[in-house]
Amino acid sequence: MPDTAALFDLTGKVVIVTGSTKGIGRAMVEGLARAGASVVVSSRKQELCEEVAKEVADATGTEVLGLACHVGEWETIPLFVDGVLQRFGRIDGLINNAGINPARMGPGDMTLDYWRKVFSVNLEGPLRTSQCVLPTMRTQGGGSIVNIGTMAAYSGGANICAYGSSKAALLNLTKSMAMDWAQWNVRVNMLSPGPFMSEMMEGGAKTQPGFLDLVAGGTFMKRVADPQEIVGPVCYLVSDASSFVTGDDLSVSGGMQK
Image 1 (cartoon, rainbow, N blue to C red):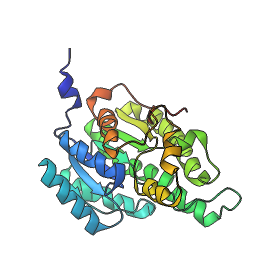
Image 2: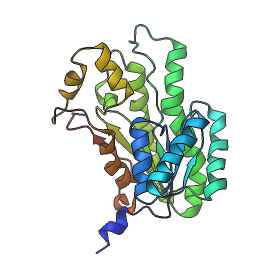
Image 3: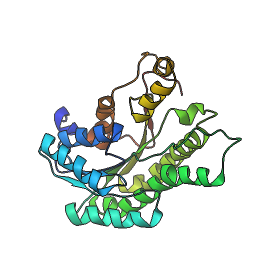
């Protein structure tokens, strides 16, 4: 029987987490570091990336790189991946967490610029970043890519149609990449959170009385999750514990229905 602890051990692995200076991204990057990985903290602002990277390094004692990248800008992503390789020489995991839902806009009000902005970050960003890490993962014998989705990809919503549609497309892309890249032992999965406490949640609570209770009511567990509750699932998907898992979508939603 394999050593269970060793299956979850990420020592020696290098993992990128995009959108990791706040919220569940911040929780994931520190959780992966505590599991032994060298991690890359990334968002759009270099100063903030460096600040969070230092916090994570001080808290965990692992090697952390803070490196900015706007994943909505297709041509900048190869330079970002090159920077990671220059520092670490390998990439074992990629968590495509960066995403936007900049305004509540229904399908009748949707503008082309808004639609393209959401899709450029939420769908094209994960595609391009995954393309750029694939050659390294293929050469080294494998890797794990985790696309962060949402339960809204299944249920839709009048005021989040661009966001939900982009994540539904990301689910399809996840399955396509998993099928294509399994030959190189590159696993691709989706992790779909339900309601997690975030700046967006806090903002909704301030402007809409009863908002948190309403959101929590959509789960079996009748609560909003703490960001730390994403750490176990993401470590599982990056680690060897999920070595036979690919093309799947793991929901972390307190029982919300797909």
